[in-house]
Image (cartoon, rainbow, N blue to C red; front, side):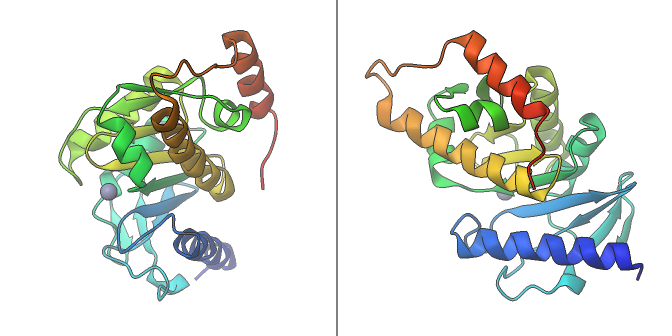
Length: 213
Ligand SMILES: [Zn+2]
């Protein structure tokens, strides 16, 4: 195995374990991937995140050709996002409960914090329900990210997906999305005060020039 692939495998493992330790990845739900040239390294199907090893990660070509391991059942979602968003180098998918709850009652979650605007965009869009693991869900979510320019979206009756230029950014984006959902649930109907849209846009643009690692 090339030394570069070994490093990327370890980095993916580090984030998956961190997600599990920090309660973001619960049970065997969710999956994470990182782009490596024209290939994608992705967590294996039904993984026990705390027992996973770097060698268990699956390798798949961007064309869907499985080259090693048994990729997550949500592989299509990851591939569809990489194909549509060339700036995405990591994709995080989980079943965060506030994200699921907010997606039941709205098609667009407002964002109230600077880090939310920086990491996600102006709003957090909600993808329509499609069966888990299906190509329909993959294109629904990837098209929505492309159309709205958001870096994350909620998936109705399912969870969320978040993207980033690296794993740190995708992980932070996933947390920011679940937090945006919680802020919305806690303040809905109480007249919560948003940042004005010029300020939200300024923060988003500033973040684009900032490299998180
Ligand atoms: Zn899922």
